[in-house]
Amino acid sequence: MPNFLTPETEAADAGPESVPPITIDRSSPVPLYFQIAEQLRSALEAGDLTPGSRLATEIAFASQLGVSRPTMRKAMEQLVGKGLVVRQRGVGTRVVSRKVMRHLELTSLYDDLTSSGQRPATEVLSNEVQPASAEVAQALGLPEGAPVLALVRIRSMMDQPIAQLTNYLPASRLTLTTADLRDHGLYQLLRRAGITLHSATQVIGARTATAAEARLLGERKGAALLTMQRTAYDDRRVAVEYGSHVYCAARYSFEMTLLA
Image (cartoon, rainbow, N blue to C red; front, side, top):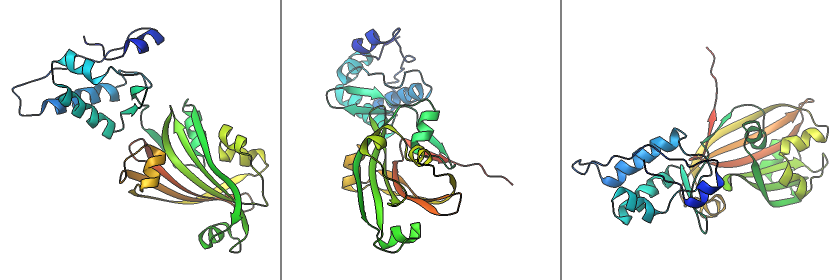
């Protein structure tokens, strides 16, 4: 059975991991790269390789399977495109976590990742007070130009960006430090400030990534993104937060339950 983890990864783990043998049918009209990619995809989706495991190089793969390096490269590109593995300069190719599935509840992405046993990481790109635009003012029930706390963050899991989060809060309600935002979820911080979240309205959509978004999220320009605009209200029905978020569609989805 071929072993597809690097020696370094095996040394760090309790024992070597492997995926089921890959069978190549050279008489089939199905391209070799596609046969390899589909069998690796099945093994990855079945959880036969641990998230975070570093895979062998394309050269090692090609040698074990008896195919050319361009064939193996094309197979790996299929897996990268499906969000099953990620390539990082100086690190290699790693297995990513299963796609994050978020229930449509009044929780933050940080809450959802933490409750599922993940370790979210946050990069704070902006934390400043600025005048509310017409859109933000309308969402928060404020006069246009009123001071709002504007936050822009990148949320990651296993060193892989999942979402760009842009949030606006009335500046009079609370002050947040960059350290707070790195170490805690926004809704955690709201609750800590004595704000009781009661309800929210949100709109979910989809579009393609701009060049700037693609760069921040480690995607290609034009990659599929999920979008969400949410206004959250406290127990007095006063708007306390307006968020405009984009998520990598290959690594993230929303789940809802419909009752008859």
